[in-house]
Structure formats: structure tokens, C-alpha cells
Amino acid sequence: MKGLFATVFCLFSAAAAIPATTPLEQTHEADPVRILPYRWQWEMLKFHGPGCPDFGSNASYATRPTYGQNTMDGSEIYLWYFAYPGIKAKIGPGVDESETYTWCHTELKYTENDNTYNQEPTANYRLRAHKNGTSIMANYQLDKGVTAEWKFTYYPEDADEVVDEIVIHGPLNNRNSSTLSWFTENSPKPYPKWNLPSCGGGTIRYKTELTITSKTSEGKGTVNSDITDAQSGGTREYGVQQGVSYDWEHCKK
Image (cartoon, rainbow, N blue to C red; front, side, top):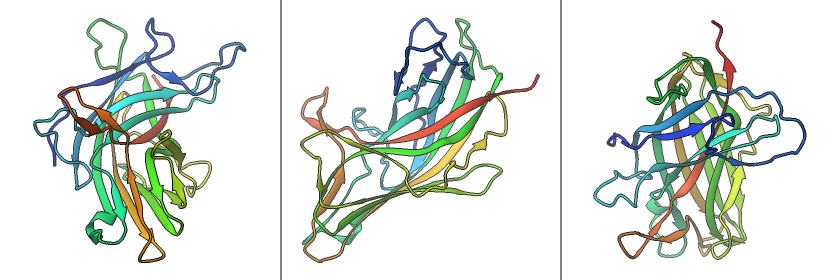
């Protein structure tokens, strides 16, 4: 188990004075009826595994929340992304087998807050997890015959496990272009959703796994993230980003 992530990442609803989300889509028609709290926040409570090393002394190399994203067209798709600089894999001649697989267990804490100055916890809405499956953003350099497989296993408190998979086949090379984003493709649709047990807050637990394989002994492949300049000098890996999807329902008074 790793240490607590002290920084709280907060999101405001569209009714707030300061927007804090990035719209996926936006239309110019009449505003749809939206079901969402005024303010909410995510924390990474715990994480462990080779794909999520501890924060250590270098704060720029951290497993961390990054940003939120949502639609504004009535489809009510909400995502929050979490970066994992330690999740990466490679395969090829001379590469040790241990580098072809990695994983991380994560526990998130969700809290609904009111619109007062002190942002007090409140419980007017219940979060529904897994609204649109899972999204992953990463860079790939895969030869023909090389495959990268993502597996996301969620552990609801009072429901069966939910498993998402994303399988990416080579040849593919987006290292020098833009980071690629995929949604889960093998999950049943509509996606199996589950409600947090309590209104106002709760936890979400999941395991993220990455495996890279090759049909031949000569196949090469890597999965990693963008290299960015570090504030302390040099460069760092930004981290592949996993997007957790959700929406809300009103709580009965």
C-alpha cells in the first residue's frame, strides 16, 4: 500500500461560475436537463504494484489524478483520468520477460461537496460507476504480430467484478504523433453500471493490467507515455492515463 495522495482534485458542475471540465461534445440547441452535483472531488487513497511506484522524493514522477472530461449534450458522459508513469511494457530480443507485464491496484475516494465557501460534504446524489466503460491513453510502437492488451478489473462493494479489455494489434507507431485514446471494446453494452452504496461519497477499487506479446521471437514493441520536460530539469514520463467513467442519480429525500 502506498501513501496518501494529499492533493484533492475537485470538479464543478456546469452551473458553477468557473468551468473545470473539458467538453467532449457541445451543441447549440437548448440546454438539456442534467443530473449532477454542484461540486465533487476525487482522491487516490491507496495504490500498490510494480505499475505504480510510491511518490518518493520526485513529485513530478507520481501516480496521480490529472483532469476531468464530460459531454454537454445530454448524453451525460463523465470521465476522470488518472496517470500512471510506472505502467509501461516492452518486448523484443534481449528484453527480459518481466518487462512484458505490469499491474497496479488502485483505490479511489469520491466525495460530493456543496457550493459553500468551505465546500462541506453533502449527499444529494449517488454516483453510478462505469457509465461508459474505461478509457486509456498511451503511446504504442508495435511491430506486426505484436499485441498490447489492457485489462481493467473493478471490484464493486456489493456486486460482481466487472472486467473491461482493450486489445491493440500492431503494426502501430504513434510515438512521434499524438497520444492514442481507446475505449473498452469487449465489455457488454450497455456497460454494466453499479451504484456506490451511499449517497454523497464512496470508494472505487480496480486493478489495471498491461501485457505485451509477440507471435515471433523477433517482434518488438513498447507501450509507454509522452516524454515531457520536468520542472526540476531533464525529462519525465507523463504517464499513461486511465479514464474512469461515471454519472449520477438523485438521492431520495
